[in-house]
Image (cartoon, rainbow, N blue to C red; front, side, top):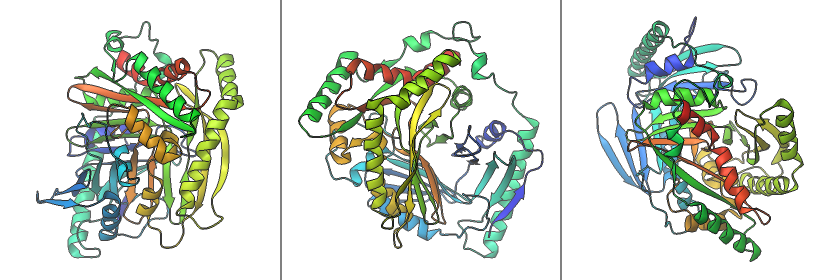
Amino acid sequence: MLLIETVDNPPSAPALFCELAKKPAPAWLDANVDCENLGRFSFLAADPFLKISAHGRHISEENCLNGEIRELEEPFFPYLDRLQKRFFRPKESDFLPFENGLIGYLGYELGHQVEAFAQTTVNDLKMPDAFFGAYDALIAIDHKAGTTWILAGGLPEEEGSEAARIRARKRLEELRQVVASARRNELPPLAKPTDLNLGTAPGLNPAADDNLHSNFSYSEYKTAINKILAYIAAGDIYQVNLSQRFATPFTSDRRAFYLHFRNLSPAPFGAYIETGEHAIMSNSPERYLLIKENYIETRPIKGTRPRGRTETEDTALGRELLASAKDRAEHIMIVDLERNDLGRVADYGSVHVPEMQILESYANVHHMVSTVAGKIRPGMSSSDCLRNSFPGGSITGAPKLRSMEIIDELEPSCRGVYTGSIGYFDFSGDLDFNIAIRTAIACNNHLYFQVGGGIVADSDPDEEYQETHTKAAAFRKALMTS
């Protein structure tokens, strides 16, 4: 059963988030731009009935209702498949893509369970390889229609039982109270990004930029790029995505920082998730995988330019990206890789490319994007689709396995959630996950964020290093104005 109510005079998403964040394990899948297409729906939740975390093949299930903890030793993707079947619920509405299920992330290092190669990077942030909350009550926002709903399904009680009806009614009442509190405590609108002049903005903290420290020195990053270029010259690989991680002292309120961060750099696949020790803040523009019944889609991004200081310069930079032979060749390689990944789970002949090398522009960057889609082959589960395409090819390289081996060789630290995926997994089997780029982690009184780019045969090490700083602009701006 599913109880759904439309919210009259709904509070803003930030106000709802601030109220829900008073409860355990808050999560916000935050579509903050492009409501006509990618960013139509946002989902907010808290107080899950189950929390799942994985470290390698060790999986821990915490029953949040009675405190019991179940420890398992098994690969994560088959476990995820069994979990979805255990709590399976068919869709009951025809207008919501997500009704109840999991919100969380798949960390990049789960790739070691997909492709068998030794892990040499160090998990110095002690992040789980995967973390999910199982939520039976949600706030859903349709930004296109301007409608907000509260909904509850009664899990984990048996479907159709009196216990499930009682729990669903109780959970719906809890959400009514959240909505009422959010109305009373509605937040004032934040300054728009265009209102912030980094040279004179109130609250400017230039020292925040001075305190950024990378896990690569400039010379080390160039050396790593030159090693990749040598691998390419030897015929080992065509492309590798190399990244560096920045860290800065951070004792600010994590939730307030996310509100500021999302406002400065809105994106269709934003997210905020708390695991307990870690707060994850993402403003990703990239979809990793969408499944809706038997439809499957991925939208790889390859190719980036900064936004211009004037309209003329901005237009010229966008055109330059689309015309760049290097970027187009790099992009086509990844589209071919994604077609191959979807081909593992799709019906023969159904994989196609409805959008090829289009320009998408965000607050700080232009991107080149394509869409690859197909029809899922009968007998393939949603977890099978995740496992056969994880991690997304746009943030590994080609061929994927060899690129991942080289990434592990050259990068000193585990990526964790970075270049993994954040999203929802509905218990019906539908799902939508981002590629966790433009993603920060707050823990240990520090903020960590990682940026990278694809290295190909004609890459210039200095230009590639500069591209990482272009992509870090959103974080720098947020830190310097918070």
